[in-house]
Structures are given as structure tokens and as C-alpha cells.
Image 1: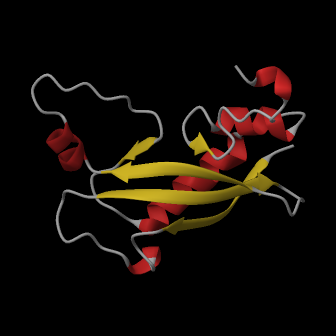
Image 2: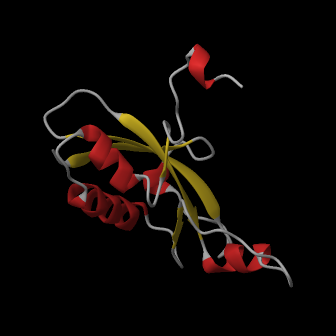
Length: 124
């Protein structure tokens, strides 16, 4: 089973294809719909696109940040982002979708990350 990028969207930018940041400091939260090739089902993964300047603004003296779920690029280009993410998705593969989703979740935050089915046994 191999992953396939289906759609990229952003709540803050309606038309990512024509989006051009006004300045070199930018940050966008992307929502990616990714599913297994030859399947109609998909899962949502989140990834923040952030410029080095925006990252530098966050890193004040003494600040420490985790970098998971972050894609860093100097100049925003939707075409470059899409091509990069398509290639990244196509490399994720496994016997089951759970295997594939786990690989994708190493870099992007999956909608079912840390998800547990409700049962009386997992209530403290």
C-alpha cells in the first residue's frame, strides 16, 4: 500500500496556487488530504510551512522549539510545495494503512495521532 496526496488546503489562504506572501516572514498551516492509492478513503495531516525569518522571530533568547510538523522554506511557492509533498507521500508505504499513516505522522501531524477508541477500560 502506498500513500497519495489528494488535496492541500489552508484556512487562512483560499487560493494557495496564486498566494504570494507580502514579506519574507510567513507561516501557513496546511491541511493535507492523503489516502492510499486506489482507495477512496483518506486521512487529514497538518503541516506548517514556515520561513526562516518567521522561525527566527519565534526563537528569542532562551526559547526552545520542537520542529515536528514543520516544513521550512525561504520563498513560498505552491508548485514547489505540492511537488515536494507528492514525492514525500509516494515514498510512504506499508502492508496496512496504519503502517503508512505512522510513517507520514513522523513529519506531519495526523488527525488520528494519539487516538484511542472509547471504552470503560481506558477511563481513569
